[in-house]
Length: 158
Image (cartoon, rainbow, N blue to C red; front, side, top):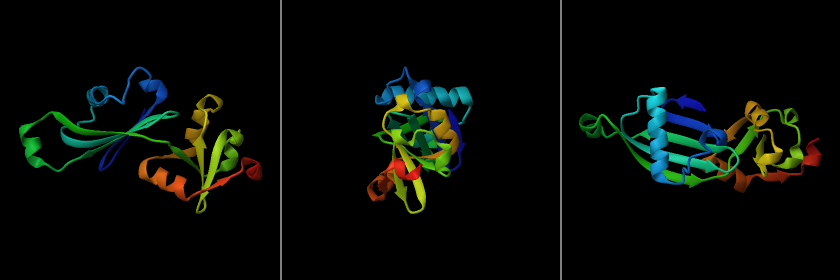
């Protein structure tokens, strides 16, 4: 699990962390967010727009952004959420393509001057190596890159 706190909160949860939860169910997703809020003392209260991006290979990414409804904060010290669940395919932006072994197990994409990897079969991949050497791209940005990028044959790279 990884947290990024800024204008909102972004929570990265790998498949191993959520293996017993069906997060396509809004109630299960809400319970998970409430338990993370309580366990890690994130201090979420008020009304939030929440997007849950689900990738079959990685797991999920939860984006939580506070809605500026001050009257809700005044009347409610609890946590209320509008949850949107999005089935997604994550890309992995790689700075050093040569740090990744087994490129033939990925769809390799090039957009501008950047290289992105798309996992086809997670059982053939050491996801830890990928996460150490790449940035996860998801949501609208990943869809844009998938539509605008060129697929590169992995033999050309090695």
